[in-house]
Image (cartoon, rainbow, N blue to C red; front, side, top):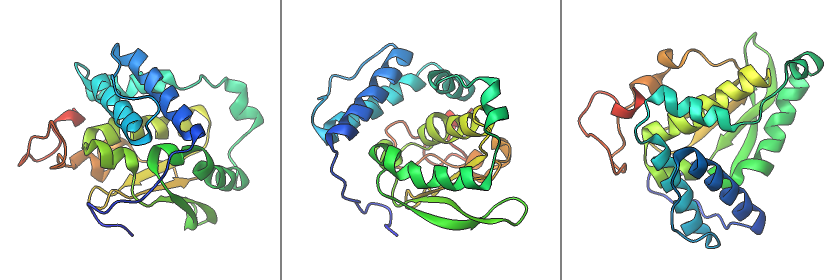
Length: 213
């Protein structure tokens, strides 16, 4: 497992650059601002996406940030959850395909077996070695408000696929567990997480990150 400060090498493919660009455009539209960084140089393009993400936070409360991201997700019709109810097979399928579709955002991932609600063991965990988005931003609130909370809400409430994401703010790893219903955000340990020293807008020495409010 990588430790804080240790890099995980990853080379963006043309498809990765496309996904980064699409995310950057979507966040830029929500923020009303766009970074001037390159759109074709992998590392610089990713930095541009993170800059746009940070711009999305300005002038918005934590709840408004989360709502803005959720509004950017596709709307799932009610019939979808009736036709495709939760299943162990569905949870394991989501875990298997996640590395194929989201490595561009978070970096290398592996899948693993995990025990979910009810004591059922299934191959529904995805372990992110070192989240590229968290490492680049160095920001607690960006991780929680723009990634963890809206993604959990979308999968759990819109798709009917319970998902719990547990970031590690020491080594920047993260575990995603499909099939595990997330507790209220206020009851999770992230609700009390402090600012990270690497964050450009950090308030160090505080009890919790000031942008979680």
